[in-house]
Length: 246
Ligand code: NDP
Image (cartoon, rainbow, N blue to C red; front, top):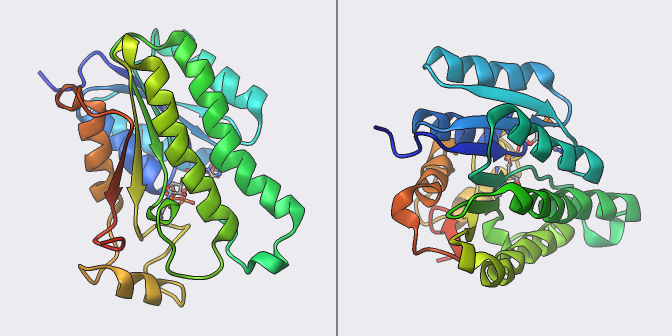
């Protein structure tokens, strides 16, 4: 038996990058997964195909994390299609890197709506359906605790918000055996933060391991938190950043 056999997981922003790796890893551990995406239906379908080739089950749901109605119905659809909900991974997120004084109100709203409001809405609806012993996992960032480069003011503030969201919510759902945790990646090679390029140089230099991380290295921690062995871990901020914040 696999450790997530019989579990249903919803991963927001699961079509590319870290979210796609999480979806594949949880499916590999036996869960049936639903993934949301905003724009790229083909990328989402490829994740499902990869999971099904390996004998798993997955579905895709189009839902922009900034659209509360869409997020809410994505959670409902997951339960309607797969039958229940045990694990929510709030992964959808974005950054609009630029200096704070040049950031527009629209850009500020966009980052807050996806990274914070989307997490609040998905979690609130998920908790209506979630079974006892469930798991709420949010993908924050190491910059939610410590910031080493300019250009990330709104983004860092949203990641700090989900950190305390996690801690505060753990106090409300513990009686149901539901754990709430925040996984904080450092520089991980994705479309959002490519390991090649100008931006990568200071980020790589700030790690203790002198390298970018791989999406699978984040997915491994998420899989552990989602699993039965992590039953006493809640309200925690778990950093997987190659030592960036050391
Ligand atoms: P990518 O941009 O590579 O992938 C983002 C994924 O989320 C895609 O599947 C994308 O789908 C989806 N997505 C983007 N915007 C929305 C939206 N508005 N609604 C729903 N889905 C959306 O990002 P990463 O994999 O790098 O990042 C994933 C998470 O990890 C984010 O929360 C990010 O802040 C966090 N993180 C990343 C780090 C890194 O170095 N990469 C470091 C620390 C944290 P589509 O193509 O359809 O838009």
